[in-house]
Image (cartoon, rainbow, N blue to C red):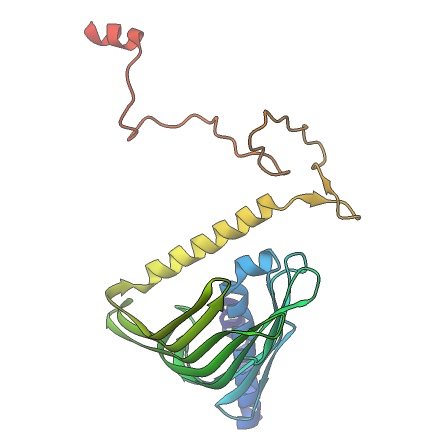
Length: 302
């Protein structure tokens, strides 16, 4: 997102004027392409950790249309890893229209249905289907959140590997709204409601007529939340990379080149990239239990 804005600022004025002479069709095509770039950048940012461990991937983002709202399709979405079981989610589609700078109206969201979940062997472990879907809202590019949303998903069913229905949900409804009370500070309220739930397990069936949860937040510092989100995503990605073992071409774990063999006393040994070193000196400030040595006590007495 930031890179696209940077590129557009660097385009010489002469090229901008020439593009304007091509008429509204060229401008619309440019807008559609910019939206596609924004969506790709947004997906990369939101799913940074999942893309790092390869538990989320997609094949392409398509943006079609000569005027807003544009038809958007995120194709070839995959969840999970081949080792643990990978699900071909398929295509998520919606319509997108710019509302104001950095804010887009989202409508006609459609999630794939049915979806087959697979285990590590590639076999179908279960299927989830959604009867009808309705969703609209306003998405903030900068804040990476919905400023408003109104959605309803009905007749949800989950079937296990034997074909037995183990989950039924009559309706899932989500609603939310946000108001910027002062610059960068928001009041938010949201409601989540599930009705007509029935789940069957090994010990019997659990039924729930209705469950509703709501939240209300005042004066939320959105930039601070965004910074925290970035920090958590970066930390998660680093930890995922550090915990990933080195493997050879045959998939066998290997020690990094030049690494000393790790000896074990029977306890946890960490990962193949080296254990966490807890032997570093820590400052005494704020520890609350630091005591002077006898030499320091003697010096203080004089």
